[in-house]
Amino acid sequence: MNTNTSAAEPMDFVRSLWSRMGFSMPGMAVPTFSLDELDKRITDLKAVEGWLQMNLSMLQMTIQGLEVQKTTLSTAATVSKIISQSGRENDGESAFKDGPTVGETLHRAALWPWDVMQKVQTQIQQHLDEQAKEAAASAAAQQEQQPPKKKSAAPAAKRPAAPRKPARGK
Image 1 (cartoon, rainbow, N blue to C red):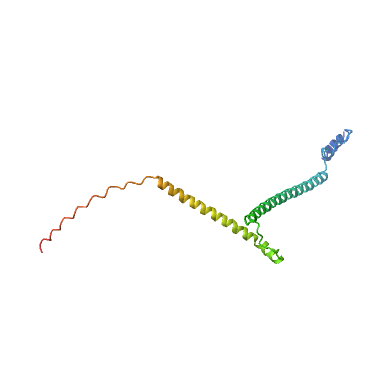
Image 2 (cartoon, rainbow, N blue to C red; image 1 turned 90 degrees about the vertical axis):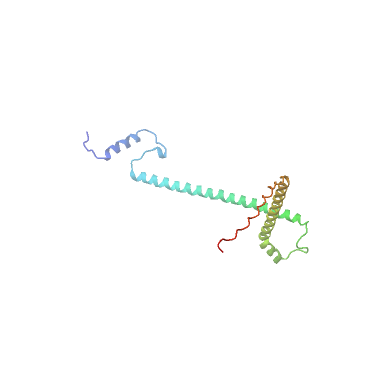
């Protein structure tokens, strides 16, 4: 019997058992007893993890970009619809009868947000005015429906003050 009891001997024994099985186990299932091999596998797996995380973040950014694009297109369609409706309200009269020049087109393009905001502000003000008129009309109708308050009887007549007595001693 061998009396050499080094720490490597038990590892050699386990390695020899694995090699005698007759078939090789795939990739990760094959145990290794080499620290260098374990460090290499850990490094490789961390590289794969980093790559997968990078792909995940790229996928998330792509999804967010598509959501922003969808919102932008939806907003543009809504603004276009609002502008076309306001154009119909003007009975189809064009602001430029002979066709706009490039400068006029650029000027109008630069001012369209201002025009839209002015129209929105006007509509909101009209809506608030209508609500105020409705509130005043309903208050007036409620006041007319309430019976008039009874006035309490006239306050009791004051008794005339007693004449003052002249001061004594003078």
